[in-house]
Every structure is written in C-alpha cells, then in structure tokens.
Image (cartoon, rainbow, N blue to C red; front, side):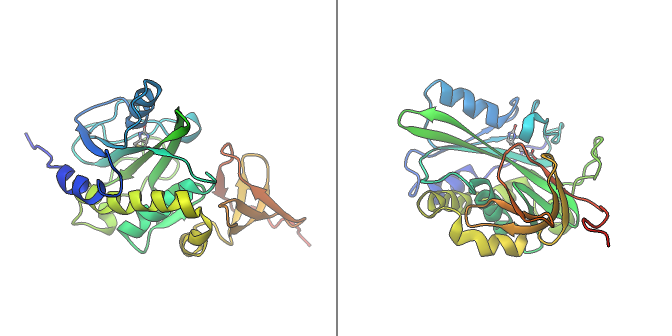
Length: 262
Ligand code: BTN
C-alpha cells in the first residue's frame, strides 16, 4: 500500500508564528473538510486549523453543488480546508484574494474565473468554497480548496476538468499543499487589514473573463470589464455597467450574438 507523506510539520513551522494556535490535521477520509470544520465551529472549536482529507465522500461546491473529487484517495485531487477566526473590515473579495494566492503559488499560466474558480486552458482546475460560522464576537472562516492534481474523467461535466500535472508533471498533492498553504495564510491575514483593493491589478492580470461575452444567472448579459476595488464583477450590458456581487450569480463565457446588432 502506498502511504502518502504529507508535509504537516513543515507547514506548521511555516505558519504557526503568524497564526498562533495553528494545527495541521490529515484524515484518510471525511465527508467534506468544509463540513467538518463548520461542524466543529458550531460546537465551539474555533482554533486555526488546516484540515486535509485524502478522500472526501461528500465534497461540496458552491451553490449547493457536489464537488467530485478523486474517490480512490490516491492523491488525484488535493482537498483541504483552512479554518480560522477572521474579522476583516470588509469581506468582499476574500474568495478572489484566496484564488489569487493559490494561482500565484502554483503557475503564471493559471487564470481566475470570477468569483472563485481556477482555470487553465479553458478548463476548470480548482474550486474554492468559503463559508463562515459565528465564533463569539468574531466570525470563523472556513476556506475550502479542491485542486485536481492528476487528470481524471469528466464525470458528466460539460468541460472536462484540467489537472495540475498537465502543467507541472513533477508535482503531487503533498508538494502542492506545501507550496500553497503558507502564502495563503499570509494572504488571508493581509486581506483582513487591507481588503481586496491592493490585489486588484494582480487579479486583473489573471482574469479569465475580462473582455469576454458573459451571461449571469440573474439574466445580466454583456461584456465583462474586470472587477472593482471590492472585487465586484463589472459587466457592460450595452445600456450601462452592471455590478455583479451576489453569490447566487454564476458567470460563463457564451458565444452569444452581439448585444446591439446593427
Ligand atoms: C466549487 O468549485 O464550487 C468549489 C469547490 C470546493 C471544493 C473544496 S474540496 C475541500 C473543501 N471541502 C469541500 O467539501 N469543498 C471544498
């Protein structure tokens, strides 16, 4: 049997100084790392923790969707959640800051698809699910990240997912975890004091949607113009610029006819 060696100690050493009380936990199997940390937070366990699962049996995505990951637990997908008490002045843009940190740790070719997907060459490579629970006077944030490491079947998805090994053949799940976590913790802590605004230009350099025709689930159609200083998506509908900030909105490039055919 192949036992995966996770760099738990190295990650702890890189993080504990900036996040007192931090711990790292690796489980062979759990329903969902996000669900587990939310259960713990609701039970009053609100310490900073990194929870990694080798296998999720009920991974969750945004908008109540399932997150299908590697069911063998053989490192095909990296799934983890970072839980920590957080009190930013403004929460908007947190998921963008998280996605930006992850892509910056991994590869210059990775792109961000608003609000919190990571894509490569027109295919989704990773997803982010952020949830919060009450933690006394603060909130407890659970930042869940799932990254496809090895190529896998589409599983009924319209576009088959991308995998990091297509881009970085030498990496495996433990190595990716090691690369990503310390910068991610730092990015989240910096976000709490500075917000999204200082990250806007770095986000725009990775923005998959900028300049593309998009359609939103609230019916808005137009050309994506990028994001504003709080991470809100701006869409030029032809009749003006619409601000898209609802978590209930998903955005997808479309091959739509021109908005104002002449
Ligand atoms: C999405 O693409 O809609 C978000 C996917 C988030 C998946 C990660 S995997 C680790 C954590 N646990 C979950 O159940 N979901 C997140």
